[in-house]
Amino acid sequence: MRGETMRRFLRQNSLGLVFGVLFLLALVGQAFAGHADYNDQLRSDGLAEVSLGRYLTSASFAVDVAENWQSEYLQFFLFVTLTVWLVQRGSPESKPLDAVGREPDADQHVGEHARADSPAWARARGWRLGVYSNSLGLVMGLIFLLSWLVQSVAGAAAYNEEQLRRLQDPVPWGAYLLEADFWNRTLQNWQSELLAVASMAILSIYLRQRGSPESKPVGSAHDTTGVEG
Image 1 (tube, rainbow, N blue to C red):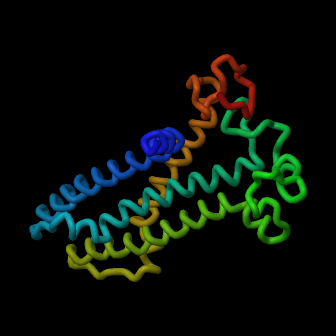
Image 2: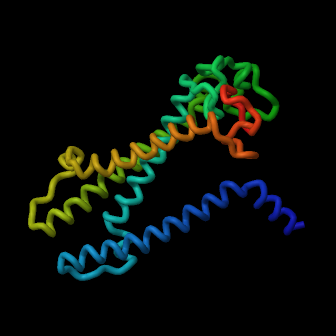
Image 3: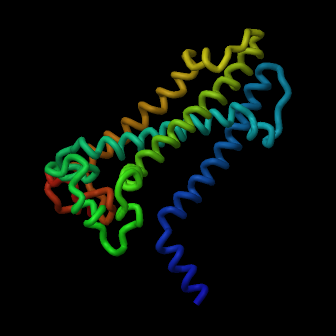
């Protein structure tokens, strides 16, 4: 019975579990590769190498991780919120063309239209329903802002380490926010994430992946919108 329960759990949560494992493997790989690259830079500057543990607690590692996280969550925040109002004809990533907006309560199963299995806050009124109705976008936006803040603080520390190696004056956090280094780190991630979202929305109009919920059924017409396979 316990084995059957475990197999059922793994099958029902396989998507999240696999991506979680892949995330950890990628993070470990980044740690080792980043450590080697960081020590290469130290050697080229005539400085002593650092241990892996010290590198993992350094500003350099923190800023490299945070700058990727903030761009990913910016992507999710924009996609979740903008797709309420914006549509793309023929894309399964879009709502149907006639469903623009927040949609009626009956379609969203909230308030008096809630079903027996609806979450408690979907049956609520007032601020609780308002918060829950926008909770996904709010959390994505909050994680984006927090990771961007971490990037800015860690980035300032890493930037000042480099300044000191060059015998130049460090800059305060506020001044670093105006530095090219901060915006170069930020914008090079933003542009790649925004391009990826646009590519997915547009390519899925004409291309298919059989069995994937991110694709339309293989035989669907190119102009079929908001239909998943």
